[in-house]
Length: 104
Image (cartoon, rainbow, N blue to C red):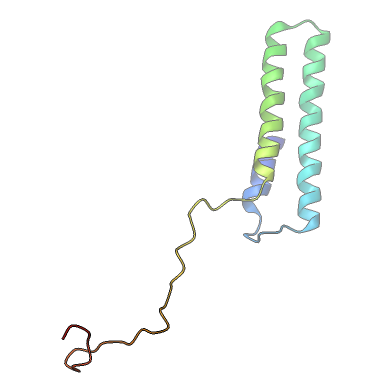
């Protein structure tokens, strides 16, 4: 549930490029608690010698850390910027029927 909360916090935040410091603190507190719980479950599985649970807990720790780090980075716009319009300073508009057009 805490992993879902991490994702919810990330995607329900405002679209500002810089989140507020309280939002960042809340996010990392939630991430820290989630990771601590997952590591605790992994340690418990190791102490109890439960091979299946060790495997599941190991995958859960890796996924939790991955989701925490992946979701924490700001959104990246992968679309390239449109090319800048270049205007020739010597450009003279040519209007139909004016007779001022180059080439007639």
